[in-house]
Length: 164
Length: 290
Image 1 (cartoon, chains in turn brown, yellow):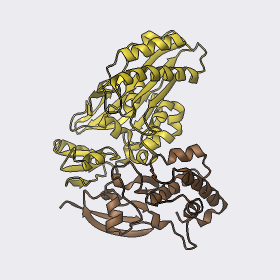
Image 2: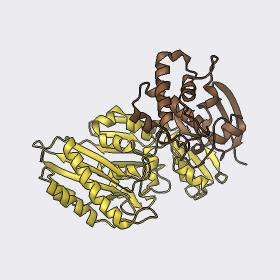
Image 3: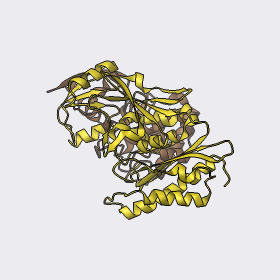
Image 4: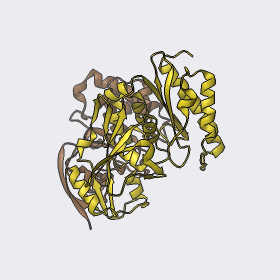
């Protein structure tokens, strides 16, 4: 077994692993760190259910080797919840009925986190472009777009509340 | 899907990478962003025994403007290129091309060097750098050499690089007055192109075309530069008649492939359409009134 040593930070907490070199980041997060909020659907880089924040940018964690987590800072959906409850992005998804079956939702939320950090006041077109890599088979996307617009407004109104 | 087992190293210096490529050319694969390589590993299309991760070789990810043009490090991500103020100002077509690749998550990791070395005939950046008349720099333990973009793509998924050579940079030459357009036709946003066109026009002081380069993506086994565009369009203001001649020439001089979704005839027709649109857009962007 060709193994690699990984020291990484997930949601602000340090982790150490020795894992096979061929392990994927999403499997490290789910199976080794036990954070199963990050989902696996297609496992081919198409659907975006496994979207996580990797060194400040959104990535599809099924398309990254776990070995690359060494020295990295990773954010998953579990890191969103704050002491005061839901992150404004989660609250907006709740308010706008932006989840139906919910399988894509953690990836949608993490995409929103990365996107709104760069673009606090996006247009609808910009939101549609930013979510091009995230598939939802239930909602038809309209409520997700509304939720991202609402999240942007909530975050602008009280930036301190954001857990991300 | 899990890749077959491999040894993994993540060197801190370019010299270490080049030494490994020199020592183990047969079984080593270098990983830049990994957005094409990892899917191939997962499908076990390739099963290398050593993966050399380039993600710590940050020295080759810079984007710099020089008097001679723009120097883009091979490890510059597609997202960095898309958002770079320098690229947008000096070479907007390169940013435009980067912005239509896959989706933002993929572009956050995918690199220009990786995309060029993968040499997918349907890749976006190869056609773009051909139209931009770029030059590529390859490094090995024995030194560096430059390769014109026109000589880099030798077959589907095959480049002019030797097994022990690593692409380290892309130089886009400065042209005094150029406009370009990258137009992509795809079934869905972010898909690979049905066809895409990169058009780069140099204008003289009187807004007359001095040189024209048109490159096509997904029009053949390799990204293609359509020959004779300067002869066809030079000296004109790209009036509609000239553009029609150029589009017909582009369509007539290529033999596109078919795939399960798109027939070769449809591709030919779309080459005509997309070349027309791309040339009209370059004309419009130059503020030229034919």
